[in-house]
Length: 158
Image 1 (cartoon, one colour):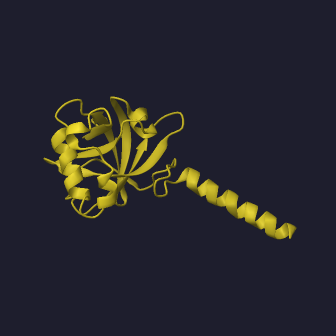
Image 2 (cartoon, rainbow, N blue to C red):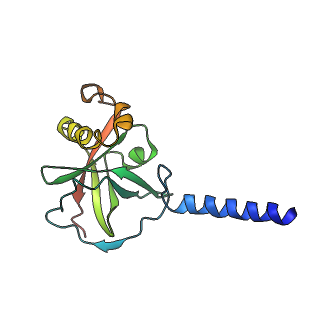
């Protein structure tokens, strides 16, 4: 019986360790992986890409799996203004984005105005496949303060 308990404890600790270091579903992690690449001048079509991994630096960096939209050849991410990763970014922060097998150094810049078309595009992209989740979003006309929209800008230092 002691061996079974020890094995269960060891397995539980391994699972917790994996969940802490790598993002799994809604759980954040530390590592992003992928092959570092310079950001292209023009992004490939992302219409068929639902999720990316975003790494936000900090004392304890955070990697999250989030949705992505492309609008007028620029990339945007959306998050609840109260979420930890959004607060880690603040108005702007360097980030790493994993898209497929490639990782890009970018800057996430908060859209203080003009974010409504991007939010509408976000809802339009994800509502057909995730209606229950999107139904929980505030209406675009009521999202100010609740939702933060960030443009992912090519890092000029890379």
